[in-house]
Image (cartoon, rainbow, N blue to C red; front, side, top):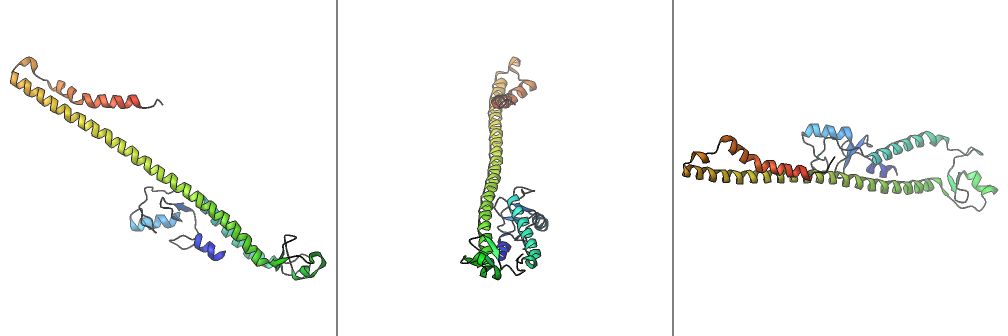
Length: 230
C-alpha cells in the first residue's frame, strides 16, 4: 500500500505527496506551488509532463486527490502512533491474527483459547492489507471518475470560448464584406455623378458616410434583435 500510494499520490515535480493539487486539462495533477514555480522558471504555461499549454492561469483544485492525500497522511500518522499500542486487552500480547468468524484481531493466546476454538484466522497484516487494497481501489476509481469529469468540463469550457471567438470573427467578416460592397456602390454612384455633371446629383460627405455605415448598423441591429431578452 505504501509503495502504491507513494507512486499514485506523488507530485511529478517535487516527488512528494501532493499539497493543494491542481488539475490541468491534459489530466496531469501537480502541487499548486510546484506548478506555479515551474511556470515562473519556464516563462510559459505548459504541463511539466506532456508540455501541453494550459489556457488557464489558475487551474482548478483537484479536491478528490487532495482529500485522498490528506487521508493517506493521516493514516500513516495514526499507524505510526498506534503500532506500539496494538496489544490484546486481555493478555497484553501483540495482535498478530485476525479472526474471520468474530471479525476482530486476536493474539496468539486468544487463538488457542476456547473462545476462538476452530475459528479461521489469518495474519492481521494480510487482512489489513486486503482491506486497504479494497478501499484504495474504490477511492482510486472514484478519483478517476472525478478527474475525467473535471477534464471534460475544462475542455467544454475551452470549446465554448473557441466557438464564441469564431462567431465574433464571422460577424466582423460579415460587416467588412458589407462595407466593401457599400464602398463599391458609392464609388459607382460618385462616378455617375461626375459624368452627369449635375450639381443636383452631387454627394455630400455626410451622405457618403451615412451610406457607408448603413449596412453595418443594419447588421448590428439584426444581431441585437436576435439576442435573447435578459
